Image 1: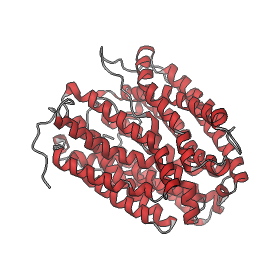
Image 2: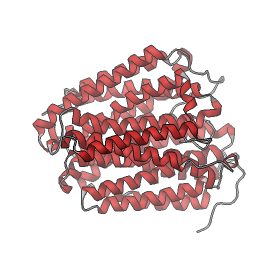
Image 3: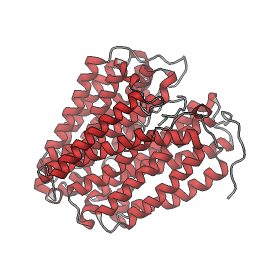
Image 4: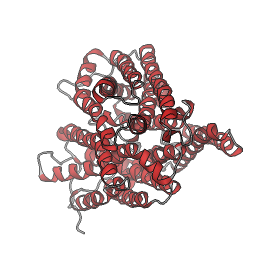
Length: 506
Protein backbone atom coordinates (compact mmCIF):
# COMPACT_ATOMS: atom_id res chain seq x y z
CA UNK A 1 0.00 0.00 0.00
CA UNK A 2 1.40 3.39 -0.96
CA UNK A 3 1.82 6.07 1.63
CA UNK A 4 1.06 9.76 1.73
CA UNK A 5 3.69 12.06 0.22
CA UNK A 6 5.61 14.31 2.61
CA UNK A 7 3.60 17.38 3.54
CA UNK A 8 4.98 20.36 5.49
CA UNK A 9 3.21 20.80 8.81
CA UNK A 10 0.48 23.40 8.95
CA UNK A 11 0.02 23.85 5.19
CA UNK A 12 -3.16 21.91 4.34
CA UNK A 13 -6.20 23.89 3.18
CA UNK A 14 -9.80 22.83 3.62
CA UNK A 15 -10.57 23.73 0.00
CA UNK A 16 -7.77 21.51 -1.37
CA UNK A 17 -8.10 17.86 -2.34
CA UNK A 18 -5.32 16.93 0.11
CA UNK A 19 -7.13 18.69 2.94
CA UNK A 20 -10.42 16.98 2.14
CA UNK A 21 -8.76 13.55 2.18
CA UNK A 22 -7.26 14.22 5.60
CA UNK A 23 -10.63 15.39 6.93
CA UNK A 24 -12.33 12.31 5.49
CA UNK A 25 -9.93 9.94 7.23
CA UNK A 26 -10.18 11.78 10.57
CA UNK A 27 -13.97 12.02 10.48
CA UNK A 28 -14.52 8.40 9.42
CA UNK A 29 -12.13 7.09 12.07
CA UNK A 30 -13.40 9.09 15.01
CA UNK A 31 -17.00 8.78 13.77
CA UNK A 32 -16.63 4.99 13.90
CA UNK A 33 -15.70 5.18 17.58
CA UNK A 34 -18.41 7.74 18.36
CA UNK A 35 -21.02 5.70 16.50
CA UNK A 36 -20.21 2.60 18.50
CA UNK A 37 -20.60 4.55 21.72
CA UNK A 38 -24.25 5.31 20.93
CA UNK A 39 -25.56 2.27 19.03
CA UNK A 40 -24.88 -0.15 21.88
CA UNK A 41 -27.36 1.36 24.36
CA UNK A 42 -30.30 0.72 22.04
CA UNK A 43 -29.19 -2.90 21.59
CA UNK A 44 -28.83 -3.67 25.32
CA UNK A 45 -32.19 -5.45 25.83
CA UNK A 46 -31.61 -7.78 22.87
CA UNK A 47 -28.01 -8.42 23.96
CA UNK A 48 -29.22 -9.33 27.44
CA UNK A 49 -31.89 -11.71 26.17
CA UNK A 50 -29.60 -13.38 23.63
CA UNK A 51 -26.65 -13.86 25.99
CA UNK A 52 -28.75 -14.47 29.12
CA UNK A 53 -27.14 -11.51 30.90
CA UNK A 54 -28.31 -9.76 34.04
CA UNK A 55 -28.29 -6.02 34.57
CA UNK A 56 -24.66 -6.11 35.73
CA UNK A 57 -23.71 -7.69 32.42
CA UNK A 58 -25.41 -4.86 30.53
CA UNK A 59 -23.71 -2.28 32.74
CA UNK A 60 -20.32 -3.82 32.02
CA UNK A 61 -21.09 -3.96 28.29
CA UNK A 62 -21.24 -0.16 28.42
CA UNK A 63 -18.60 0.38 31.10
CA UNK A 64 -16.02 -2.04 29.72
CA UNK A 65 -15.62 0.29 26.75
CA UNK A 66 -15.76 3.45 28.85
CA UNK A 67 -13.24 2.12 31.38
CA UNK A 68 -10.34 1.49 29.01
CA UNK A 69 -11.13 4.60 26.99
CA UNK A 70 -11.12 6.83 30.08
CA UNK A 71 -8.01 5.22 31.55
CA UNK A 72 -5.90 5.23 28.39
CA UNK A 73 -7.04 8.32 26.49
CA UNK A 74 -4.23 10.55 27.73
CA UNK A 75 -1.69 7.82 27.06
CA UNK A 76 -3.04 7.42 23.53
CA UNK A 77 -2.57 11.12 22.87
CA UNK A 78 1.00 10.97 24.17
CA UNK A 79 1.84 7.98 21.98
CA UNK A 80 0.62 9.85 18.90
CA UNK A 81 2.73 12.89 19.71
CA UNK A 82 5.83 10.75 20.22
CA UNK A 83 5.54 7.98 17.63
CA UNK A 84 3.53 9.74 14.92
CA UNK A 85 -0.15 10.64 14.83
CA UNK A 86 -0.91 8.80 11.57
CA UNK A 87 0.85 5.65 12.78
CA UNK A 88 -1.09 5.56 16.05
CA UNK A 89 -4.33 6.51 14.28
CA UNK A 90 -4.03 3.58 11.84
CA UNK A 91 -3.03 1.23 14.67
CA UNK A 92 -6.05 2.35 16.69
CA UNK A 93 -8.43 1.84 13.76
CA UNK A 94 -7.06 -1.65 13.14
CA UNK A 95 -7.26 -2.53 16.84
CA UNK A 96 -10.83 -1.22 16.99
CA UNK A 97 -11.84 -3.31 13.97
CA UNK A 98 -10.42 -6.55 15.40
CA UNK A 99 -12.14 -5.87 18.74
CA UNK A 100 -15.41 -5.16 16.89
CA UNK A 101 -15.16 -8.57 15.21
CA UNK A 102 -14.69 -10.17 18.62
CA UNK A 103 -17.76 -8.30 19.90
CA UNK A 104 -19.85 -9.57 16.99
CA UNK A 105 -18.76 -13.16 17.56
CA UNK A 106 -19.05 -13.11 21.38
CA UNK A 107 -20.75 -16.33 22.59
CA UNK A 108 -21.20 -15.08 26.17
CA UNK A 109 -21.61 -11.74 27.87
CA UNK A 110 -18.22 -12.18 29.55
CA UNK A 111 -16.50 -12.41 26.16
CA UNK A 112 -18.49 -9.41 24.93
CA UNK A 113 -17.37 -7.33 27.93
CA UNK A 114 -13.73 -8.25 27.29
CA UNK A 115 -14.07 -7.38 23.61
CA UNK A 116 -15.73 -4.06 24.49
CA UNK A 117 -12.79 -3.25 26.75
CA UNK A 118 -10.45 -3.96 23.83
CA UNK A 119 -12.58 -1.65 21.68
CA UNK A 120 -12.00 1.08 24.22
CA UNK A 121 -8.23 0.63 23.87
CA UNK A 122 -8.53 1.15 20.11
CA UNK A 123 -10.71 4.21 20.61
CA UNK A 124 -8.17 5.64 23.08
CA UNK A 125 -5.54 5.43 20.33
CA UNK A 126 -7.51 6.70 17.34
CA UNK A 127 -9.67 9.43 18.89
CA UNK A 128 -6.95 11.84 20.11
CA UNK A 129 -4.85 11.12 17.02
CA UNK A 130 -7.71 12.03 14.66
CA UNK A 131 -7.97 15.56 16.05
CA UNK A 132 -4.22 15.99 16.45
CA UNK A 133 -3.76 15.13 12.75
CA UNK A 134 -6.04 18.04 11.84
CA UNK A 135 -4.43 20.47 14.25
CA UNK A 136 -0.92 19.61 13.06
CA UNK A 137 -1.68 19.45 9.35
CA UNK A 138 -3.94 22.40 8.53
CA UNK A 139 -2.90 25.98 7.96
CA UNK A 140 -3.70 28.22 10.96
CA UNK A 141 -6.20 30.17 8.86
CA UNK A 142 -8.13 26.96 8.08
CA UNK A 143 -7.61 25.09 11.32
CA UNK A 144 -10.76 26.39 13.02
CA UNK A 145 -12.90 25.51 10.01
CA UNK A 146 -11.31 22.05 9.78
CA UNK A 147 -11.92 21.31 13.45
CA UNK A 148 -15.45 22.70 13.15
CA UNK A 149 -16.08 20.29 10.27
CA UNK A 150 -14.62 17.44 12.34
CA UNK A 151 -16.92 18.33 15.24
CA UNK A 152 -20.03 18.66 13.11
CA UNK A 153 -19.51 15.54 10.99
CA UNK A 154 -18.54 13.28 13.87
CA UNK A 155 -21.51 14.74 15.72
CA UNK A 156 -23.76 13.60 12.91
CA UNK A 157 -22.27 10.10 13.19
CA UNK A 158 -23.06 10.05 16.89
CA UNK A 159 -26.53 11.47 16.22
CA UNK A 160 -27.55 8.72 13.80
CA UNK A 161 -26.14 6.03 16.09
CA UNK A 162 -29.32 5.26 18.06
CA UNK A 163 -31.46 5.19 14.89
CA UNK A 164 -28.98 3.05 12.96
CA UNK A 165 -28.47 0.74 15.92
CA UNK A 166 -32.20 0.29 16.38
CA UNK A 167 -32.69 -0.53 12.70
CA UNK A 168 -29.86 -3.06 12.62
CA UNK A 169 -31.01 -4.76 15.82
CA UNK A 170 -34.60 -4.98 14.61
CA UNK A 171 -33.88 -5.95 11.00
CA UNK A 172 -31.00 -8.38 11.48
CA UNK A 173 -29.20 -8.81 14.81
CA UNK A 174 -27.39 -6.83 17.48
CA UNK A 175 -24.18 -8.41 16.22
CA UNK A 176 -24.37 -6.34 13.06
CA UNK A 177 -23.81 -3.09 15.00
CA UNK A 178 -20.23 -4.29 15.50
CA UNK A 179 -19.71 -5.83 12.06
CA UNK A 180 -20.44 -2.53 10.28
CA UNK A 181 -17.14 -1.26 11.71
CA UNK A 182 -15.11 -3.64 9.55
CA UNK A 183 -15.70 -2.07 6.10
CA UNK A 184 -15.44 1.38 7.67
CA UNK A 185 -12.07 0.48 9.19
CA UNK A 186 -10.75 -0.81 5.85
CA UNK A 187 -11.76 2.46 4.18
CA UNK A 188 -10.16 4.56 6.92
CA UNK A 189 -6.86 2.68 6.82
CA UNK A 190 -6.72 2.95 3.01
CA UNK A 191 -7.39 6.71 3.01
CA UNK A 192 -5.05 7.40 5.93
CA UNK A 193 -2.17 5.40 4.47
CA UNK A 194 -2.47 7.10 1.07
CA UNK A 195 -3.39 10.65 1.95
CA UNK A 196 -2.66 11.55 5.59
CA UNK A 197 0.83 13.01 6.19
CA UNK A 198 2.74 11.85 9.24
CA UNK A 199 3.34 14.31 12.07
CA UNK A 200 4.71 14.23 15.60
CA UNK A 201 5.58 16.66 18.37
CA UNK A 202 9.37 17.26 18.59
CA UNK A 203 8.97 18.82 22.03
CA UNK A 204 8.18 15.38 23.46
CA UNK A 205 11.74 14.18 22.76
CA UNK A 206 13.41 13.25 26.02
CA UNK A 207 10.15 13.39 28.02
CA UNK A 208 8.96 10.31 29.85
CA UNK A 209 5.80 8.56 28.79
CA UNK A 210 3.55 8.30 31.85
CA UNK A 211 2.74 4.59 31.56
CA UNK A 212 2.64 4.29 35.36
CA UNK A 213 -0.04 6.95 35.64
CA UNK A 214 -2.15 5.35 32.91
CA UNK A 215 -1.91 1.91 34.55
CA UNK A 216 -2.79 3.23 38.02
CA UNK A 217 -5.75 5.20 36.68
CA UNK A 218 -7.15 2.32 34.62
CA UNK A 219 -6.73 -0.30 37.36
CA UNK A 220 -8.06 2.04 40.04
CA UNK A 221 -11.16 2.86 38.01
CA UNK A 222 -11.67 -0.85 37.23
CA UNK A 223 -11.57 -1.81 40.91
CA UNK A 224 -13.87 0.98 42.00
CA UNK A 225 -16.34 0.35 39.17
CA UNK A 226 -16.43 -3.38 39.90
CA UNK A 227 -17.13 -2.73 43.56
CA UNK A 228 -19.90 -0.22 42.86
CA UNK A 229 -21.51 -2.53 40.30
CA UNK A 230 -21.23 -5.87 42.09
CA UNK A 231 -21.18 -4.82 45.75
CA UNK A 232 -24.82 -3.77 46.21
CA UNK A 233 -26.06 -6.77 44.20
CA UNK A 234 -23.88 -9.39 45.94
CA UNK A 235 -24.10 -8.03 49.46
CA UNK A 236 -20.57 -6.69 49.49
CA UNK A 237 -18.68 -9.96 49.35
CA UNK A 238 -14.97 -9.93 50.25
CA UNK A 239 -14.14 -9.77 46.53
CA UNK A 240 -16.31 -6.71 45.91
CA UNK A 241 -15.12 -4.98 49.07
CA UNK A 242 -11.48 -5.76 48.32
CA UNK A 243 -11.84 -4.48 44.75
CA UNK A 244 -13.28 -1.22 46.05
CA UNK A 245 -10.52 -0.74 48.61
CA UNK A 246 -7.86 -1.58 46.03
CA UNK A 247 -9.44 0.79 43.51
CA UNK A 248 -9.44 3.70 45.94
CA UNK A 249 -5.85 2.94 46.95
CA UNK A 250 -4.68 2.80 43.32
CA UNK A 251 -6.40 6.07 42.50
CA UNK A 252 -4.69 7.61 45.53
CA UNK A 253 -1.35 6.35 44.23
CA UNK A 254 -2.23 7.82 40.83
CA UNK A 255 -2.72 11.27 42.36
CA UNK A 256 0.50 10.89 44.34
CA UNK A 257 2.41 9.92 41.21
CA UNK A 258 0.94 12.86 39.27
CA UNK A 259 2.18 15.22 41.98
CA UNK A 260 5.72 13.84 41.86
CA UNK A 261 6.39 12.97 38.22
CA UNK A 262 8.19 15.61 36.13
CA UNK A 263 5.92 14.96 33.10
CA UNK A 264 2.55 13.80 34.52
CA UNK A 265 -0.36 12.90 32.29
CA UNK A 266 -2.64 15.05 34.50
CA UNK A 267 -0.82 18.09 36.00
CA UNK A 268 -2.51 18.62 39.36
CA UNK A 269 -1.43 22.26 39.43
CA UNK A 270 -4.20 23.06 36.98
CA UNK A 271 -6.74 22.41 39.72
CA UNK A 272 -5.32 25.29 41.77
CA UNK A 273 -7.51 27.47 39.54
CA UNK A 274 -10.89 27.73 41.27
CA UNK A 275 -12.60 28.28 37.93
CA UNK A 276 -11.01 25.20 36.34
CA UNK A 277 -11.92 23.02 39.33
CA UNK A 278 -15.48 24.34 39.47
CA UNK A 279 -16.07 23.82 35.76
CA UNK A 280 -14.83 20.24 36.00
CA UNK A 281 -17.06 19.62 39.02
CA UNK A 282 -20.04 20.83 36.98
CA UNK A 283 -18.88 18.56 34.14
CA UNK A 284 -18.85 15.59 36.50
CA UNK A 285 -22.41 16.14 37.71
CA UNK A 286 -23.95 16.90 34.32
CA UNK A 287 -22.25 14.08 32.43
CA UNK A 288 -23.01 11.58 35.18
CA UNK A 289 -26.70 12.42 34.76
CA UNK A 290 -26.45 12.25 30.97
CA UNK A 291 -24.75 8.83 30.92
CA UNK A 292 -27.07 7.14 33.40
CA UNK A 293 -30.18 8.53 31.69
CA UNK A 294 -29.03 7.34 28.26
CA UNK A 295 -28.36 3.90 29.74
CA UNK A 296 -31.82 3.60 31.32
CA UNK A 297 -34.06 5.30 28.74
CA UNK A 298 -33.61 2.90 25.77
CA UNK A 299 -34.35 -0.06 28.06
CA UNK A 300 -37.44 1.69 29.44
CA UNK A 301 -38.73 2.48 25.97
CA UNK A 302 -38.37 -1.12 24.79
CA UNK A 303 -39.11 -3.22 27.84
CA UNK A 304 -41.80 -1.05 29.47
CA UNK A 305 -43.29 1.26 26.83
CA UNK A 306 -43.24 -1.48 24.19
CA UNK A 307 -41.20 0.36 21.56
CA UNK A 308 -39.29 -1.59 18.93
CA UNK A 309 -35.50 -1.11 18.84
CA UNK A 310 -35.87 1.07 15.74
CA UNK A 311 -38.53 3.26 17.30
CA UNK A 312 -36.56 3.54 20.56
CA UNK A 313 -33.46 4.63 18.65
CA UNK A 314 -35.39 7.15 16.58
CA UNK A 315 -36.93 8.58 19.75
CA UNK A 316 -33.52 9.94 20.81
CA UNK A 317 -32.66 11.65 17.52
CA UNK A 318 -34.45 14.99 18.25
CA UNK A 319 -32.26 15.47 21.32
CA UNK A 320 -29.08 15.27 19.29
CA UNK A 321 -30.51 17.47 16.54
CA UNK A 322 -31.31 20.19 19.08
CA UNK A 323 -27.77 20.06 20.42
CA UNK A 324 -26.24 20.22 16.96
CA UNK A 325 -28.37 23.21 15.96
CA UNK A 326 -28.03 25.27 19.13
CA UNK A 327 -24.62 24.60 20.69
CA UNK A 328 -22.65 27.01 18.48
CA UNK A 329 -25.27 29.74 18.83
CA UNK A 330 -25.25 29.41 22.61
CA UNK A 331 -21.46 29.54 22.51
CA UNK A 332 -21.57 32.90 20.72
CA UNK A 333 -24.10 34.24 23.21
CA UNK A 334 -22.00 33.07 26.16
CA UNK A 335 -19.00 34.93 24.77
CA UNK A 336 -20.97 38.15 25.21
CA UNK A 337 -22.72 37.41 28.50
CA UNK A 338 -20.14 35.23 30.25
CA UNK A 339 -20.58 31.55 31.14
CA UNK A 340 -22.22 31.83 34.57
CA UNK A 341 -25.81 32.33 33.40
CA UNK A 342 -25.97 29.56 30.76
CA UNK A 343 -24.02 27.15 32.96
CA UNK A 344 -26.51 27.77 35.76
CA UNK A 345 -29.69 27.72 33.69
CA UNK A 346 -28.74 24.93 31.25
CA UNK A 347 -28.38 22.10 33.80
CA UNK A 348 -31.64 23.11 35.48
CA UNK A 349 -33.46 22.96 32.13
CA UNK A 350 -31.84 19.59 31.45
CA UNK A 351 -32.98 18.45 34.91
CA UNK A 352 -36.55 19.41 33.98
CA UNK A 353 -36.25 17.25 30.87
CA UNK A 354 -35.03 14.33 32.95
CA UNK A 355 -37.91 14.80 35.37
CA UNK A 356 -40.30 14.69 32.40
CA UNK A 357 -38.81 11.34 31.43
CA UNK A 358 -40.31 9.91 34.61
CA UNK A 359 -43.67 10.13 32.79
CA UNK A 360 -42.50 7.55 30.22
CA UNK A 361 -44.10 4.23 31.09
CA UNK A 362 -46.49 1.56 29.86
CA UNK A 363 -48.46 2.79 26.86
CA UNK A 364 -46.65 6.13 26.65
CA UNK A 365 -47.19 7.99 23.40
CA UNK A 366 -44.22 9.51 21.66
CA UNK A 367 -45.57 12.99 20.96
CA UNK A 368 -47.29 13.43 24.31
CA UNK A 369 -44.78 11.78 26.65
CA UNK A 370 -41.37 11.07 25.11
CA UNK A 371 -40.77 13.96 22.72
CA UNK A 372 -41.28 16.81 25.27
CA UNK A 373 -38.80 15.21 27.67
CA UNK A 374 -36.22 14.60 24.94
CA UNK A 375 -36.51 18.15 23.56
CA UNK A 376 -36.29 19.86 26.95
CA UNK A 377 -33.32 17.73 27.95
CA UNK A 378 -31.59 18.43 24.64
CA UNK A 379 -32.21 22.14 25.03
CA UNK A 380 -30.69 22.15 28.52
CA UNK A 381 -27.59 20.29 27.36
CA UNK A 382 -27.19 22.60 24.35
CA UNK A 383 -27.28 25.63 26.66
CA UNK A 384 -24.71 24.04 29.00
CA UNK A 385 -21.96 22.40 27.01
CA UNK A 386 -20.44 25.17 24.86
CA UNK A 387 -20.02 27.66 27.76
CA UNK A 388 -18.69 24.81 29.89
CA UNK A 389 -16.03 24.02 27.28
CA UNK A 390 -15.04 27.66 26.89
CA UNK A 391 -14.76 28.07 30.67
CA UNK A 392 -12.47 25.07 31.10
CA UNK A 393 -10.16 26.26 28.34
CA UNK A 394 -10.15 29.89 29.43
CA UNK A 395 -9.34 28.90 33.01
CA UNK A 396 -6.35 26.82 31.88
CA UNK A 397 -5.01 29.38 29.42
CA UNK A 398 -4.04 28.84 25.78
CA UNK A 399 -0.68 27.26 26.64
CA UNK A 400 -2.48 24.43 28.49
CA UNK A 401 -5.52 24.08 26.20
CA UNK A 402 -4.59 20.58 25.05
CA UNK A 403 -4.15 19.04 28.48
CA UNK A 404 -7.16 20.98 29.84
CA UNK A 405 -9.28 19.44 27.09
CA UNK A 406 -7.94 16.00 27.94
CA UNK A 407 -8.57 16.38 31.68
CA UNK A 408 -12.11 17.63 31.13
CA UNK A 409 -12.75 14.75 28.75
CA UNK A 410 -11.47 12.31 31.36
CA UNK A 411 -13.67 13.83 34.06
CA UNK A 412 -16.74 13.42 31.84
CA UNK A 413 -15.94 9.82 31.00
CA UNK A 414 -15.23 8.86 34.61
CA UNK A 415 -18.50 10.50 35.64
CA UNK A 416 -20.38 8.39 33.13
CA UNK A 417 -18.53 5.24 34.14
CA UNK A 418 -19.43 5.64 37.82
CA UNK A 419 -23.00 6.81 37.17
CA UNK A 420 -23.86 3.79 35.00
CA UNK A 421 -22.45 1.56 37.76
CA UNK A 422 -24.17 3.25 40.71
CA UNK A 423 -27.49 4.84 39.70
CA UNK A 424 -29.35 1.73 38.40
CA UNK A 425 -28.46 -0.23 41.54
CA UNK A 426 -29.29 2.72 43.79
CA UNK A 427 -32.66 2.97 42.03
CA UNK A 428 -33.41 -0.65 42.94
CA UNK A 429 -32.72 -2.26 39.56
CA UNK A 430 -30.63 -5.43 39.61
CA UNK A 431 -30.33 -8.92 38.20
CA UNK A 432 -33.03 -9.68 35.63
CA UNK A 433 -35.22 -6.70 36.61
CA UNK A 434 -34.82 -5.22 33.14
CA UNK A 435 -36.84 -8.19 31.83
CA UNK A 436 -39.69 -7.44 34.28
CA UNK A 437 -41.54 -4.32 33.03
CA UNK A 438 -43.10 -3.59 36.41
CA UNK A 439 -39.86 -3.82 38.38
CA UNK A 440 -37.85 -1.88 35.84
CA UNK A 441 -40.47 0.85 35.51
CA UNK A 442 -40.39 1.62 39.23
CA UNK A 443 -36.61 1.69 39.24
CA UNK A 444 -36.47 3.81 36.10
CA UNK A 445 -38.57 6.54 37.71
CA UNK A 446 -36.25 6.66 40.71
CA UNK A 447 -33.21 6.54 38.46
CA UNK A 448 -34.13 9.43 36.16
CA UNK A 449 -35.21 11.54 39.12
CA UNK A 450 -31.78 10.91 40.65
CA UNK A 451 -30.26 12.01 37.34
CA UNK A 452 -32.44 15.13 37.42
CA UNK A 453 -31.16 15.92 40.92
CA UNK A 454 -27.54 15.55 39.77
CA UNK A 455 -28.13 17.85 36.82
CA UNK A 456 -29.87 20.47 38.94
CA UNK A 457 -27.00 20.27 41.46
CA UNK A 458 -24.65 21.06 38.60
CA UNK A 459 -26.62 24.23 37.86
CA UNK A 460 -26.60 25.29 41.51
CA UNK A 461 -22.86 24.62 41.73
CA UNK A 462 -22.24 26.73 38.62
CA UNK A 463 -24.30 29.58 40.07
CA UNK A 464 -22.25 29.48 43.27
CA UNK A 465 -18.77 29.05 41.80
CA UNK A 466 -18.54 30.30 38.22
CA UNK A 467 -17.59 33.96 38.66
CA UNK A 468 -14.92 34.92 36.17
CA UNK A 469 -16.08 35.32 32.59
CA UNK A 470 -14.72 33.07 29.90
CA UNK A 471 -11.73 34.49 28.07
CA UNK A 472 -13.13 36.64 25.25
CA UNK A 473 -12.40 35.48 21.73
CA UNK A 474 -10.71 37.71 19.18
CA UNK A 475 -13.08 39.68 16.97
CA UNK A 476 -14.62 37.48 14.33
CA UNK A 477 -13.43 34.23 15.90
CA UNK A 478 -15.70 31.24 16.18
CA UNK A 479 -16.63 30.20 19.73
CA UNK A 480 -14.86 27.26 21.28
CA UNK A 481 -17.42 24.50 21.10
CA UNK A 482 -17.46 20.74 20.94
CA UNK A 483 -19.62 17.93 19.81
CA UNK A 484 -22.11 18.21 22.61
CA UNK A 485 -24.51 15.59 21.57
CA UNK A 486 -22.94 12.38 22.64
CA UNK A 487 -21.96 12.46 26.24
CA UNK A 488 -18.96 10.88 27.91
CA UNK A 489 -18.94 7.68 25.95
CA UNK A 490 -18.38 9.49 22.70
CA UNK A 491 -17.82 13.18 22.41
CA UNK A 492 -14.93 15.31 23.52
CA UNK A 493 -16.24 17.54 26.32
CA UNK A 494 -13.58 20.16 25.69
CA UNK A 495 -12.23 19.93 22.17
CA UNK A 496 -11.28 23.48 21.39
CA UNK A 497 -11.13 24.94 17.96
CA UNK A 498 -7.58 25.85 17.23
CA UNK A 499 -6.21 24.57 20.53
CA UNK A 500 -2.63 23.43 20.28
CA UNK A 501 -1.90 19.76 20.23
CA UNK A 502 0.18 18.42 23.07
CA UNK A 503 1.06 15.28 24.90
CA UNK A 504 -2.19 15.39 26.83
CA UNK A 505 -4.33 16.23 23.83
CA UNK A 506 -7.66 14.41 23.74
